[in-house]
Image (cartoon, rainbow, N blue to C red; front, side, top):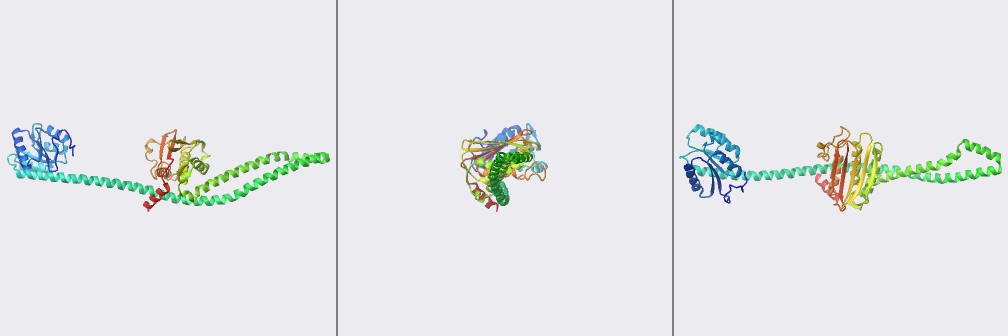
Length: 446
């Protein structure tokens, strides 16, 4: 339907009022038909006159009408082509052909072409006009009802599509939480098994370090005593000491023990991160230092990173953030793994954190292959991946997006093919309760 408020709309329209377009080139017949229409409609109609087809089409373009009374013989058009032009311009409007030709064949063809009725000038009476107006009124009512129904269906479809998207998101979260729970249990078991031997290795190395210091001191005292009291024996001992490189051993052994202790401490830190990653009490929202979240994710992903990328840390001063520690650790880890997978041979990954007003920000930047522009709008879709079969599930970035969204945050991506990609996560310092939201989503999914 056309705009009810256009320039040709001369008066306010009531619910029972008809707007009729009369396309007629004879002034006398135009006057007769206008009087007849006003009489039949008892004044509850607006008659819009047009003396040619072009004028009638202009009215149809600007004004919504209920009925068109159409003369087939006009100065600028004749025959059924006139009817076809009107129907093409306003297919939703009822059209009654009004002509001076009492031709049954023409009437049949006009009805077949889409006309509502065929009236002969001079023979059209009030009953026929009343019937046409009643049909137009019913047509208007049906069209309005259909339009309302279509709007309701469109709203229902939009709600169903949203529910489907929410359900898919919930299913992804449920699957990921089950996966993370299994990984957490496995990580907890591995951490426990590693922690025990690392503990006694560290303890034994510390004891050995003390023993070695005493032995070094004793050897020095023995060498000095033999040199003073028994020069010959002292010389022989000195020869053996030089042959066996005892001095080098005594000098190098503390460094070896120190390096071993450093390695054991690194293993201890990795085990601690695994235990933190697997802790069940992290299912609750609590305050956390996002820099620690980043460091923990780096420790977990380090074995994947160290062979292909130089890691640069630029961690700023951050306030504590109420968050789901384990889920945010998964976010950073997924972004790191995504970055290293984008690097073909060797590259650089930079992890930055900073405060931006009431938000804290985490950025992961790589010098990888970049993301083609046509894929940028789909990278967060579940199961969308550009990797080869068997090398990606398409869930990593979808999980990242969902977790960030549940923390009331945002994630942006800036990528250039051949140069690299930067993912930037912004999280409010006071976030909603993602644990509660996740439980609600799980409930909906189930």
